[in-house]
Length: 175
Length: 309
Image (cartoon, rainbow over all chains, first blue to last red; front, side):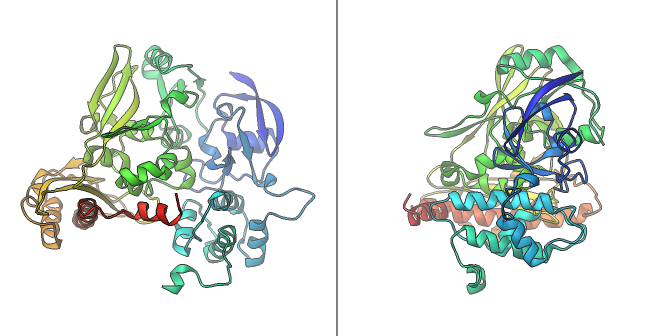
């Protein structure tokens, strides 16, 4: 059985015909051609398919497309304005060399983007420690194992989002 | 892989959800956050013909803190509960345990009711619910009923839910003024399933001696296990490392445990971890109970004061 649904992705409304069992990850990639969202394990472990649903990072392989009608979906294609500069996280990944094959990168970016937005929304945010960043990113796997630069890039941007200077030693280092 | 063909139904009320589930019988499953069920569908380990999607039911996503209890609707997201300021202040063991549940992206979507009804013995929420003496509310074709959290799971991934019955809420009693609870877990990596987990509750008498204790462990058998012998040795003396070690040793050696063997941990190793997590959870419970008894503000209170909230 298929049905016609309206999906709002990166600010654009799309009408698609999907089966009930169509995963959001497949709908984004195959029906909408947004192949920045990657499919790795397809059972919620690797984090490659992470997108944001109303601002919240979620596994798109664990959602049915028909479930998210009316909600705002953000994929890596919508992280930065196509005409403008890269998103600060993308810039930081570039600067730190935080990607090798790049397959896991969109998932990492969208997970970290939620943290950055949450820090910016807090009245007195505390800059996260490296340990906290590592725990946050534990839900995203990089099979090139390039975690060091990824952690550094996210830590730098999270520190900035919390209103602190990333070149200063972090709270943990001071202790 | 992809999920097998199915129909996704969107009920307008919990009662309608129950009716749809009852009608579908064995071919139907309730879909909450989907963080456990959808992997099973994608791996074709489950193939229900009908999914009853509970996500539209906002009346199941309410959080209410009364004088003596915290009532959490089944569709409250794990991350919502983890971040709720009132919950962090009144029942800090709950957010402490939730921080171990999967990852940010799975907690954003995963629900309290889904985790309880899935009844994974290594899951954190069923353990905390049992240790804190929570009650779950079920709604079914025969009407509502309440079941102690300790009686919800009947075996590995099995519950006492009848066909057509839905878990709609879980109520956690708040801790008393001289009580504290603690949670500890051992897992290979952050967010992995626990190899051993413990949740303990301690109540102190006016002299600071242990007057009441609960010791419960997860991931060490087909369901959460309460170990009353371990709680018993704590009674009547002030809480301290020697007693915690004694309680931990009793848990590690207990016949109540039936630790599964896995690639990451043999049963004897899990028993060793059981001892350690019980000691750690007891130390945290004692610290929380002493802080509550002395009226000293918890870490969360201090944070709020610093932030001028």
